[in-house]
Image 1 (cartoon, rainbow, N blue to C red):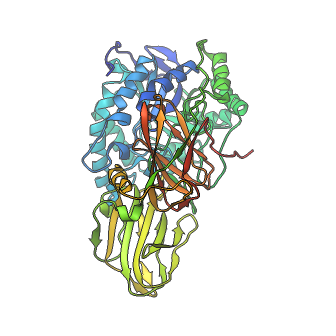
Image 2 (image 1 turned 90 degrees about the vertical axis):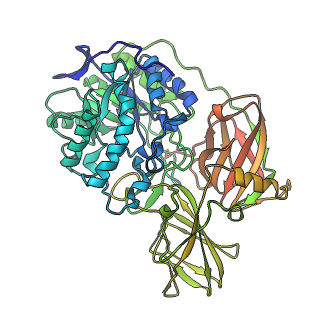
Image 3 (image 1 turned 120 degrees about the vertical axis):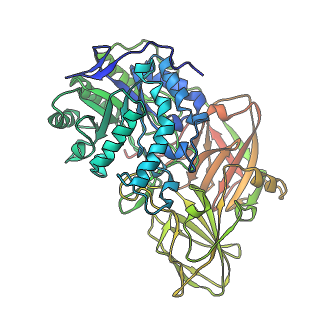
Length: 592
């Protein structure tokens, strides 16, 4: 662990026109890197490449739900070691901005808010409701000591801490904002506090307080946006706290990109106006596992696994044309080192053939629980992401309907597939052909991370009506995938897969591949339909044949010398037993 107190304490304050570092004007040139979206062994590499582009600061959100997956727990191990991440920022000679929320948006599951929090229907969302404030207090009491000792006033890198996040787009509860400010200060944060909002309508005022430094979020019309901000804050440094230089992707759409020259011109205009900037994203990383969020503005749109964001540094940490365009712009205004990052090495290519598989529904997840009464929501299992299995016995067939599906349900009668209901398509009814044992595999495709549907429950939203009569007393289990041990053991006892066979779904398949040692890879699943892929037990995230994403990024540190395991959770079935490692990423066709 790097020593967080190695440097002498400095001062950082907000002056009449500038940020002041030890009394001298300081322009923040920041880039966003989310430590929780990057393998921890790669943090130092990504931070160094930010400095080589000319940046002097690293910004990160803090995801409450990732640190506290269940009530009463606060994890900081592995990719959640915020303290170590900040120490690496300091070791590179850079400053840091921390944005602890408690809401972060970030296209992250539930906007970073824990799903367990809202199992109590009385708990408020982003408000001064007492139960919500109490939970936020417990979170900050666990988190902020990590930040306090790493403030610039304590010899660390942290120069700014944000209060909430784009709150003006959600609400205007000043009591809530005041509570967050008072709590943050009481727990020892003494660097300047700021708010960020879109420079639009009354959002800047609604999402802030007089003593908070107001910043904007935008990606175009920089001079106009800065003027809007100046009208609402006559003194103090101008800052774009999120300079949107790219965008995220949803399943079933194109890959979003922005022109490097156009983005660089906007950055140049912003810097020429004397503003500070945080490039969102400098390096996007990956929504590993089941961590992706979703939008719902009338249509539910889950975010893909890649969070490449068309950022200057790609998902796998490689400089892009935008990286060098931004570097050239920064060099017009500030000194930039002559060092540049090396080019991407060619990744290993290989074919892997799965050798065994086990049907998912027969392998089982956690123990089944009988839930009396109406069809339950999945939160009753104590698992807040992934897959769940509903079961009941029907004494007749007919039309089965629900109020809503959140988010995708596969129906099986006596083991045979019946059909799928999808939230994206607004589907709520399905014909069950006969009596028998009904199983429904429910996929939470990502909790909404923006707007009024934050905090909503998941599952089959009841009542469940079959031919006019409500179905009661369901069996429900969480399909635990944190460990693949039970699926691996069951697959080893199964019949080996033939070379020419296809793989039915839902199932978990296993194969092995050899490697000389760690190194990035890109997994391509042509011929497979939908599911998740795992390397050496690590959940790489979701794949889906509808695209746009065609490859999954495999961080190099996951790969071992010698034998490595590849596992595939396939929901529908594949036309092949082969999976390929390819030379580079394919995030799908863009909009051009």
